[in-house]
Length: 242
Length: 230
Image 1 (cartoon, each protein chain N blue to C red):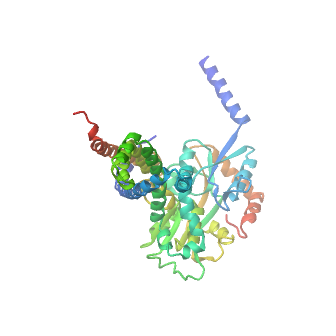
Image 2 (image 1 turned 90 degrees about the vertical axis):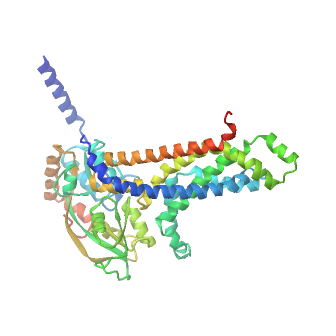
Image 3 (image 1 turned 90 degrees about the horizontal axis):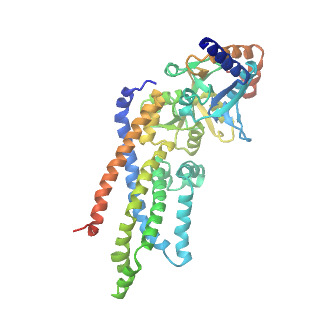
C-alpha cells in the first residue's frame, strides 16, 4: 500500500512537472546589450534572446525574473528562479555554490577612458578606477597597485561616473563596453590598451546537481548547430563572441 | 545550510572599519542637521504663510521622497551637468563622501525640523504668557522659555530620528562608499556568503543602536531631572 501510494505520488509529481513545466530564468536587466529592460518594460538583450532560443529548443515555457547582481546567486539558491542567464562568468569560486552549463559566449576585459587623455593602462597609480561590484572586472581593478578603486552596484552607475569624470578609467567587460562606446553616452570615450584575456567563459548557472544543466548543454549545442546562435550573435556584434 | 563562523570572524576587522565611516556620516549629519533645524522650526511656526512656506516646502520635499532617490539625484544626477562639473563646488561634489554627508544632513534636518516644530507648538501657552507678562522680549522668550522646553518635549521623538538615520546611512553603499553595509557587500562579493556577512553587519548595527539608546537614556534622564521625584 505504502509503495503504491509512493508510486502514484511520484507519477503525480513527474506528470505535473511535465505538463506545467515552466523554467524561471533569473537575469539582472542592467547589463546592456546582454540583459536590459527595454522601452516596454520587458527584459531584452543577448542573454534573453539566447535563453528564449534555449527554451524553445527544450520545449518549455520560460519566465524571466530580474534580480540585482549581488543577490543573483543567493536568489538562485533560494529557488526564486531555476537558472541564471545573466552573462555570468564561470569561476572556481562560484562553482563552489552553483553548477554551470557549457559556455554560451566568452568575454575579455578592457579599460575605457576619455579620448585623448593618454592614460597609460600600465601606469594607473593614483588614478580612480571604477568597476561593478562582485565582477571579475572588480577583481582586476582591485589588483591594480596604487589605484583608487570604486565599486558600483550596476554597470550603468559606473558609466555615469565615468561620464562625470569621477573615475578616470573604467574596468569593464569588453563586449558591453563596446556596446556603450557605440551609444550616445559613450561618445568621446575609447578603449585604452589591449583587451585583457582572462579566459572568461560565460555560462548558465543552475543549482548544484540540477538535471537542468544537461538539458541546457544539449540545447546550446543545438542552437549552435542550426544557426540560431549565429543569428542572435550577429544582431548584437559584428564579430563572433562564442 | 553550512553556517560559516570563520567568514564572520575574518570579516570583522573590515566591518568595524566600515562602522567607523557609518558613525562618522551619521554623527556629522545629525549634528549639523540638528543645528540647522532650530531656526527652520522657528520659521515653520510663524503665522505668516510666506515665512512658514519655505521651510514647509523643504521638509515636504525631503520627507516626501525616498532618501535613495535623493542620493541618486544628488550624486549621479547633478554630475551630469557641465555647469556643475565646471563650478567651484565640483571638488566637493565629486567626492561620494561629501554627497552622502550633504544628503544625509538635509534629510535628517527636514525630519528634525518637523519634530522641533511640533515641540515648539506644544510648549504650554501659560509659560509663554507668563514670560511675556514679566516683559521678556522675543529673543529671551525663545532662548529661555520656548526652546529649552521644546527640546525636552522633542527628545523622545528625536532619538527615533537618529536611529532611523543610523540605519538609513546604509544607502551610502549605493554610491561607492565603504560604510558598514558597503563593506559587507564587498566582502559578500568575494566570499558569496551573504547570510553570514549580513548577519554580522546586522549585529554591529544592533550593537551601535543599543549603545546609542543607553547613552541617550542617560542624556534624557539628565535633561528631565527636574521631573524626578525627590
